[in-house]
Image (cartoon, rainbow, N blue to C red; front, side):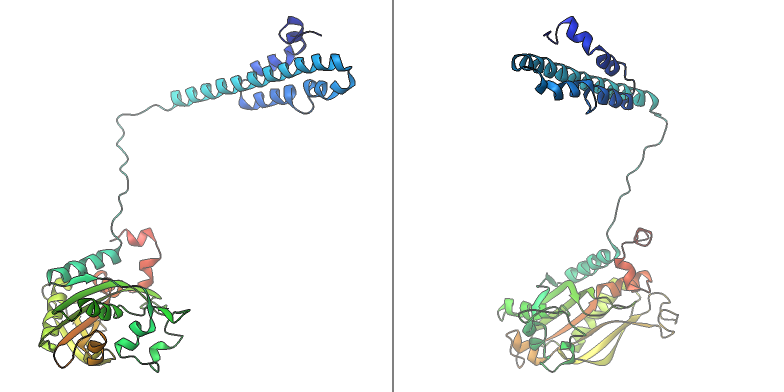
Length: 344
């Protein structure tokens, strides 16, 4: 039996080798490979019929056929590499670099409008002497409700208002629990002057309310704190955020954790107080709630309301962004539409 390296063995499979070497495209090479090594090829058929030969002849014939198969497989791999190199060379020759063309500038992103507003508020609070603090978004009922003078019968504990979790936990409905944690962390020291920013959660979803939104809470506790201190602080914040001509007004209101309480309006940033569609012709926009810290809240934080007092205020960061940018639907901020976000 002849060896695959002999002229006779090479001639026996010459047609297969020549077809592989003559392939000019990957498709032609695949067809040649199938004819030489596929299930219906002469080589595969010869390997399949080895069992019909005597043992001694079977071994020698099998050795020859395996060498032929290895040789054909190597030829296929070499030809495929040659074809790939040729295709790459043709593509590079066709792609001429025009040095006169202007470069492509990468599109540079920017802060999200809500993040821009948050950072703006943080900067204002820091310059007013507040310390930025944070707290957990998964809270206990005590921190979220009881410590803030909202007993078990309070309507805010209804399932349609709050996301409740197992084991008496819930997603905080406001950043006010950070007030309690900040006072506890202070351990009775004065003054307490903190600002808390973070996400809060309520079961709301409409153009002016979201199930997840960001709040900023301010808290000051010290000796002799009164409404004049609160109003002066809010006036300074309003002018920093909405412009040097912004004015504020306080309207009596009710919040469980402050007494007295007030809704705070600011001069409409769109019309400057003249009256427009945004402010419903009133010249004012409601921006936040505020008041003097309730005695029950001071006690929960570890302070004696007979000795110290304080004020607190809170507002939604998205709400401020709406007023600053003239947006009429909060949901636009979180729909990830580049056409909208790129305007800011």
